[in-house]
Image 1 (spheres, one colour):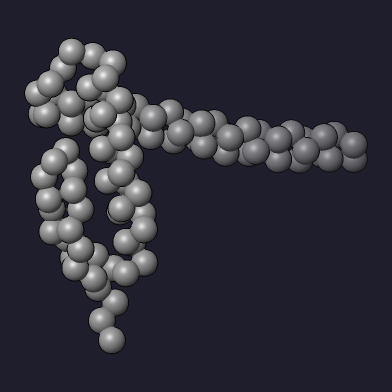
Image 2 (cartoon, one colour):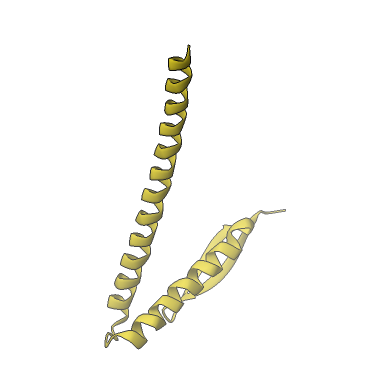
Length: 95
């Protein structure tokens, strides 16, 4: 049995045929829904009607959010490493 699936997703009024892993379907559909929702939100908030501009603005917003999350995860990792080093130093100084 094949683990791939052919689906069509609609983004900004255009249909895109995709061949994906079955396990990816829910995530891809949710991503397409998030893009379409963001485009509608932008349309209602700004006077922009050009779909290419709306897609570019959506891409910029999503990329900015992703970079913020990545930076936050990196900071969290660094804090854990610092805490571990701090514990090692305290242990060493107690000897």
